[in-house]
Length: 264
Image (tube, rainbow, N blue to C red; front, side, top):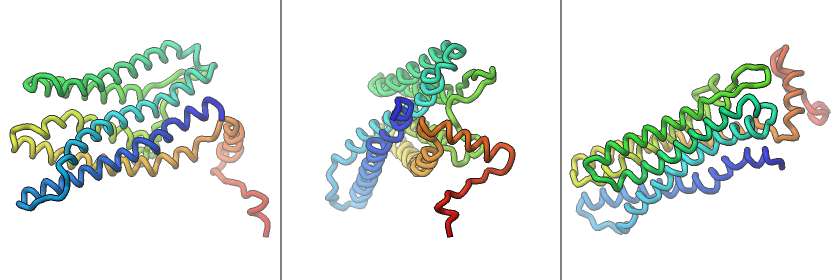
């Protein structure tokens, strides 16, 4: 495979062998933590070890960083492909590339500061957590909507968003899931507040939002393979484009049957 093909596979490969197993582990510990809490509230002696709560919290922090990281990686791939690998686009977009690179660095830095904000003075930490969560999310959306200037002088999207089918868009599902993970990370210290009423409120918010995030992760698992099927390997690209031009430009798109399919 070419460098372009390897770059295309990095995002789904990391999702399969790291992010989705981590989602499973976080969901398992979340369920165990809830069951243990309910058993203790009912006055029963729980057989679930108390370590499940800290493990859920620790893995949840890993998951938030992983989801943001893989979202950035998924956007970096087409940007690298269109601006760096395609030498024809570099001259008109080199400044744009370095500007986008600056947004990547700033977004990652904001995420790091979001993690560190939890250790600040509790009276001011909420402000810094809200600020860095907002900056992390804002940076992701800015990167996702960047454009580049093609050889014909027109501007085109760097990251394919499937706006014509936004309701089943892998891009929007991923961005929403990442935003929910950022928000969960920002409110995590409030879930463990000494104020029991406040902690209970934020715990309910945390549970509701992460249940929604889980549904978007399922959507990611469905739309990701679909999009991969639509991306040809580098050596196939010219042939696929030619077939599209021949069959789909001047008439409704039709797929011609192979000789084996035509045989009686």
